[in-house]
Length: 511
Image 1 (cartoon, rainbow, N blue to C red):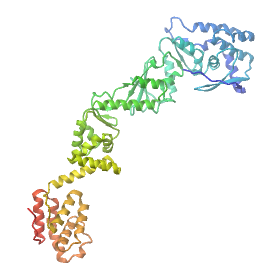
Image 2: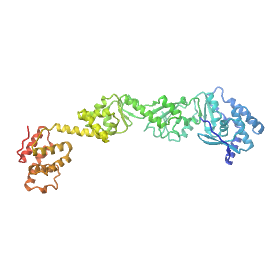
Image 3: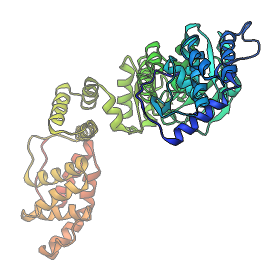
Image 4: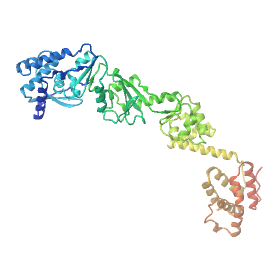
């Protein structure tokens, strides 16, 4: 749909002048090129017949300069433009041309008589499909007619929205995309892998599905198609919908089906105020928000509907954390969506109060959860790091809850207990550190420390400070040290006491 043009007279180049004169001469006997022809059975009486009749009255004067000058000043606007153009061909002269700046480039035209600028440009560039519409565009809009400009001609379906098949195929070819066709219409190569804007061209009876990358220049398919047609109401010629291509576990959410755009989004798109990328992002977010508000769990392009367990497995949530997270998700009123399989992404998608509830559930302590989350935020640590810390703390608490508790222990018992608890809560590395510190003590503490290092396979280079009998005693104690590292509950007390006895210590554990 061609817009108004801006002009300013300039000296014509010889090439421009020659081309314009050639086209003017070609129109002498073919005024029908300037008006649309009617599609079969579309118009009981063609609304452009009267305009064509006026042009046919001008054509016989093609060799009469005075008559052409007269006709270029009076009569129907298109007839004036036609006479003015024939005058250029007759005079074979167009020293000065006005540049018309259009959305399709700058085109120079000759001004003669009193013909309107738009009609002059349309007549003198009848071979340009977009500009050809200027000859009848205003008349067609006024009378609510549908006009289509093909490569070689114009056609009209009058008041019926029915573009010819040739026009539809030309329009699709102009997209310059490798379109595939099926029963649902045509689609770009990416339409099955990412959000797609589906334009249902009503009159053509075809759906065109394009992703954001495959949109025409400007990102607006209806406006692109309208460059070569005039319709009463562009918005009414198209239905717009969003195609997400989500793989759904069932058919409850409807996210796998085309969703009509909101009326506001459709108008913004058709009017050219928002391009396809903006509309796709906006409408995709709206669709997913509506689905999650209804309780759906979405991971990337997969929808698990109301199955949080399947969703958490797909995200890759550790098995130990999964029950707690599942309970948390089930307690929420809405679902959740994450872009990729990542615990960090899932935690970031949760509200802060949900993360606090998760930590409180893991630690079984609301105040500790608040403190942990507050400290992490102050230190800039991620939510994933905070949850891992809570998991480690919970693990330590679970381990320690299965061990006996004493207010105080004798020195040797205290050393062995520290090494064993460090191994159970923090692992081998921390246990080695504790045992190595024990080497600095004397007597039995030093020997027991070496026994632990032997069990932990960390005694290399440390035995040279021991006497032979001390090394032999340490080797003798390794089975008892190993039992202590592996034991829990009452077995832990018994293993610790057995280690003390075997070392020759007289220490007795408190009751």
